[in-house]
Image: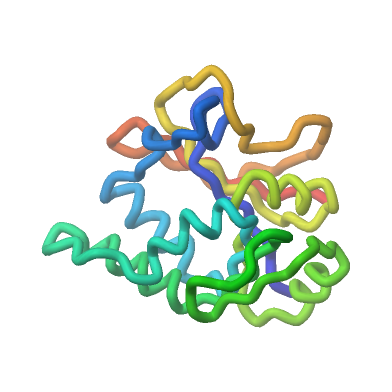
Length: 186
């Protein structure tokens, strides 16, 4: 059975974007991006909400990053190679290859996908991830804590949920970010 993994870059106070919708403070440097690439290689399918999908669609045809951008080119290849499922009631068509639009978030269909997938699934976007967490579908939570406090915005994790977690891994980066990987206990 494949795992469903929620991964997010979040401020120290738990937000994926500030109250103005900005997340420019979350841009990973080369060291963090290279680490993220290694985490993302085993993912065969990404599940996204519309806004996260529109942000990530950049990776379908990114600009030439030059010699310094090897890690970014590698990420683009990883992202392009995976299937994408976008949950949206407003998006009419996909702007990227290997992408399908689903009009509703169906926990049973996702559970079936997990049971039949040959590679792990990643879920991106705090809103759609909150729905998966509330439906007890998420197996792992991977958080990259940025060394910034933004004071409000969109929360990385949903309110009103209590979940026991088991720390699986941790890492500190030179830019001040910290990585925490947790298993969600059943």
